[in-house]
Image (cartoon, rainbow, N blue to C red):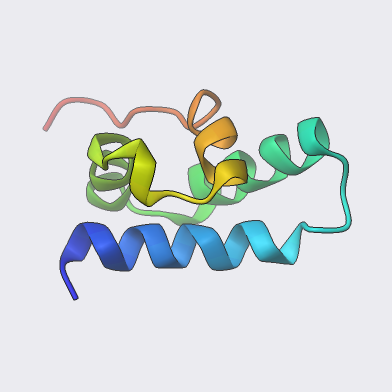
Length: 71
């Protein structure tokens, strides 16, 4: 499994944890989790991923994921 595939899988598992929430709340919760707990290289990798490889809720959350500061 590639690093990007692993990050997509991890983000999908986070999204699944918020399945009970309405779409907007889920996107905000997914992004908040990623912003708080993912290291900058992980966020950078997820933001660079092909959107087609991501779960729909993860794609919606990407707009709220903060890009890390330049290395």
